[in-house]
Picture 1: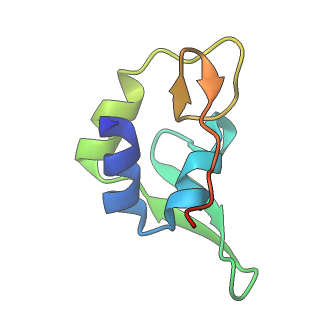
Picture 2: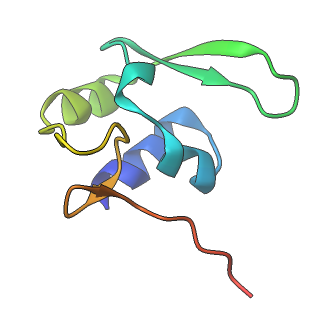
Length: 80
């Protein structure tokens, strides 16, 4: 949960987009994002707190997504 909250806080992206973020989007110094509204490709600098956290995470061998639960991507559920 801490990873999801830090990504939300420091990337200013929507929760669904954060859950879909992949390791290749993170370069170690920035997160590459495609802005949903304009389609523009952005490099969002990684805050030192976020960078330290992400660099300390073990990457799942079964998933490219950053946010996982038991080694699998977290699914996005619609709230009704």
